[in-house]
Length: 510
Image (tube, rainbow, N blue to C red):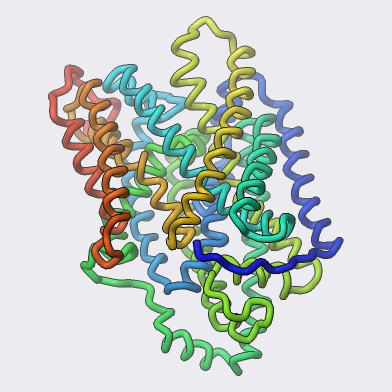
């Protein structure tokens, strides 16, 4: 991250009241829902009784996160609108998961998606996949906490220097644990609904205020559009075959399709929300709905980046900066009416915590159901519920530590926050996508080849990341292509032997 000067930020009492009110809502919601948690299925799946619309909103909240709240504007501010083309991959992935993955999950009645691999390849493969998820989610969610920490560091700790970002990351992790540990997945989903309303409302307010300022500055809509076109800011689709470009039509149709397929179908963080629905049809509707609604919401976030690009040159508070995140935070805290700044900061916290709470619950769910329960078959629901809450606290501590590591890691890179957050996910997504596709599409694979496939995908992803860092940027391979290569190799290894099991886990192809 480029070094940027620190700005003095002073929020009014009304702004702080808005932030405090948001925090109070989270705590009260968690305490209220805690009354309904009597067993682990309630804690992790809410009794499979959640309405589809609430699940759709929760999935949307997690998939957007603080990475989109700050990263979306930064992407448009520093580049253009090509990130929007990645949504094509999301639509393709949602349709595949609805057709292939969800029928198998619901037919098997799984609590974690990795239980499907146990029935296909054996317990060792399930354990390995669960460990792969936990490792990947630890880093991916740690990165999201670090991104959300920018707001807290900026408004409360004096700036977004490295040490402030680390301290803010630890504070946010502690807050996430405080309200997630009480009510389980029901708390996650219902607080996500509240937080989505808050952060989408916040971004609408920010965009409206900024739009009025820019129109006054540029003299109207036509001059503003002309300025954006002359700066090549309105490019939304590229058909380039250059492998160093991250956002093209081809990466959207292939790399981002695999990324989103892994997110919806193999990542317990998102998949767990889908499993709380009454039926696979409700789950499919929630998933596809969240993807479709997410497109205009992402476009709204990116429009703020375009408006900031036009507005910043005449704004004394941010004059001369090239860092999109700093420009966004400066505008949110120093150039909006009293009270609005607090709403915007609360919205950013909501975006960050909406992805943290779900990650904590998913990590605890995977640990308890895939690792702890099989080794303690006589454990009562009361005991498992206590272990589940201990797991939430433990994972929260681990996420805080990883978020601090991500602050240092990204400080050595010039990648945008969105690129950084998405690239971190590929370490686990490539091998998990490959093994699940092998399990559902073929009758090949054994416990040994599944584990070898997971290891192959992880090693290849890490090796390509290290190699990429040594290359000139124009010769680098963008992470969607690295994800594709690692997934293909991992799939080949997993399918290298014929399965000793003759049936697949209720695949729709049977």
